[in-house]
Length: 339
Ligand code: ADP
Ligand code: MN
Ligand code: MN
Image 1 (cartoon, rainbow, N blue to C red):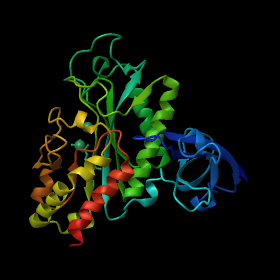
Image 2 (image 1 turned 180 degrees about the vertical axis):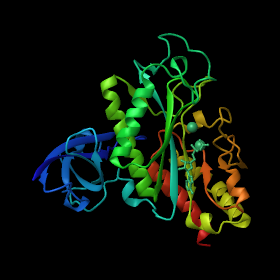
Image 3 (image 1 turned 90 degrees about the horizontal axis):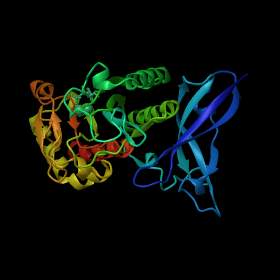
């Protein structure tokens, strides 16, 4: 028997953006445990905006698990929050009710800022560094500073060792801003891995005294880019059949559901989706081939292959909940694929 450190991780009840929470229990197993072997556990919901003090127990239900490369015999356990009966999803538990389809593939591009002492990493104490231009995919101290790349590389290695399907990393347009991409088949798989990657990034940066700023427009109305989480998606039908007619009715469905999409694409998105800085205005749906100023960018390959492949919804922001984003895309797709 080996003692494993099980880190139970969940989303708390804060709105509009939940925080990641985690606590450890040590349990003995003959070998790395299967998901079924991981027991339900409880926590004090009155400290996480998930219960009243008088009846504070909430239940943690393991739904996905990964080896924890930063700990000896560690396991990262993604959990859903349940009511005390253990079977009813807690109102804050979005994952329990989303639409899923393993045939729908998602690629999320998570942008974020490193923050130190309340300012983007690499910003002087007062004023601003050199304007945007050389930071995106930059190399060298002047472009990316001294510590950011060390952290980004360490995070990538942790995620890969945990089995999270990272597809890439790059320095972004603003100083102190970076991106990683995760690809997964199905809403739950892709979104679980995104939340776990966020968890690993936040935990890793503790030792560097650096915070992760996920807000979509942390520098407000300035000439500094905001952060998005572009959602690339393709259904089985889009990959195998597609066609111009299907594509046009899909775009019409996205236009019809503009409000419903924006509602789950992350808070304060009107501050980011202004029509500037490679964005489309939040209240006007548009699409275009290779157009980074459209709501949905249609890759050249999509058109060249006879309207087949994947599309990129550029509107979701860096603080959005990937469970709800993926689910909303699937709901809109279903209006077209089922009719
Ligand atoms: P960008 O030019 O927008 O920065 P990237 O190359 O960073 O684009 O990202 C393209 C994304 O598309 C990747 O995250 C990848 O996972 C995703 N992707 C590629 N093929 C598919 C597909 N068939 N279905 C869904 N997503 C896909
Ligand atoms: Mn980007
Ligand atoms: Mn993109």
